[in-house]
Length: 72
Image 1 (cartoon, rainbow, N blue to C red):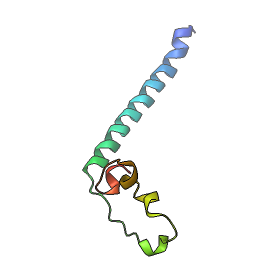
Image 2 (cartoon, one colour; image 1 turned 90 degrees about the horizontal axis):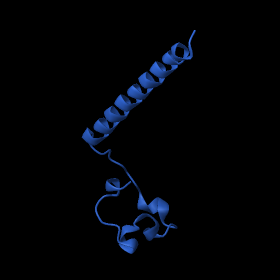
Image 3 (tube, helix red, strand yellow; image 1 turned 120 degrees about the vertical axis):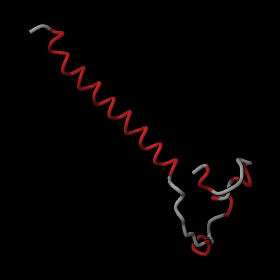
């Protein structure tokens, strides 16, 4: 059996696996962009010992405003 015939199944398998990965990645990105953000309940009283700027860093490093979800 020639070398090309031995490599053909491996190459086809890799191409198939890559194609499946590409499709799944596209599906995932589309699903994420169409889903509304989940509601999160965060009680500030549980984090009183934490400096506010650790979480609300956008006020100290000027990285923008709005909900945390836009970046995180």
